[in-house]
Length: 235
Length: 231
Image (cartoon, rainbow over all chains, first blue to last red; front, side, top):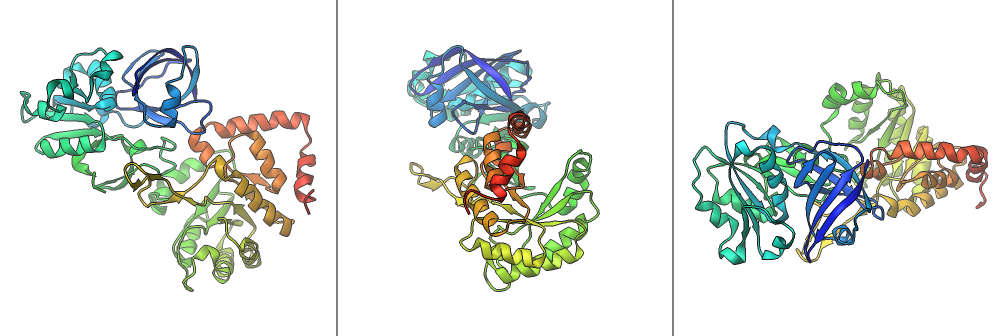
């Protein structure tokens, strides 16, 4: 458990861009996650990072549950507890001889943005899709796609990209977003970062199972990155 | 709990556990009596301190009653495992209505102690998606919410079995919880969900307990459990 201090926090109604400073330096590979816990909660929750350098870590967080609602109230100087990093990163699963289209759905864009910063040589194209422009108030990056501004969704946009048959996809977002990607780009190699409710983050509680060709695996310990040809998303 | 099975455990995990300078408890579970006997035979020569028979799984015994609530099946299973085991046998129970009778059957079968409690079943429903959260609908409900249930269960069993060794667990998250468990009647205190919330939690609890016992006498809280203010 590492103590961290809030350095900066920007919020909108549905999103948080949180910057923390850890008391000691940890290295988080893109695709890995950490467990963040507020003092008043017994269990932490898993979060991917959008940016990390030295002791500074940034998170892009969707406000969806009790803890993220509380996180909106964090102030600069507040502390929160961090465990990790956990999970197997993109770089250990993907094929390094390919280039990848990074396809993010909502806050699922975070680990892909992190990936694009660390491994630009492996990136073919990037689309970070959000439905409404609210995110622009706190996130100013290239490749942001806003559905209602463009009139199409990120997957329709991806269809029009100039990509070769050898390219692959890295995708992160809701389960439906990932399923839709799989359906639309079935001829391509796709690695997805899967989301799950997690109790422990280290494979003990068995709360995040996924059916794979090699039996039941845990998203936290054996993932969160999976080759989509190896998992059954309908299970 | 889903796990890679006994062969992989012996190959991969046991050698690591045997390097640790502590008492290792091997908790085993199966569908039938022969599963338990088979596991004990395979693990008998490990340097583990004791075996725990986890009976709280919803497996059905011969009589059609789940093994963990069938007095005759419990007596028989403990008796048979005791015959071949080179180590003490503890039996882990969940929260059952006639738990005293079940523990009694285990003790008559030769159990050296009991572990209380296994997680009761719980579930969560997402009303927006109109679906259950867990794949099987329900699962073990653990953590601080079950602590009062665990304490009451240990208390019940300690009241009836004055000398029976009890490993108490269920929602231990800090040293004050551990003291409550000892006071309720536990001889050893276990941590489950707490380790999942913070793998370093046991170290913190031990350090805090050491501080606590610099001020308080262990005998004082022990006598509260054994002699009881509550009998």
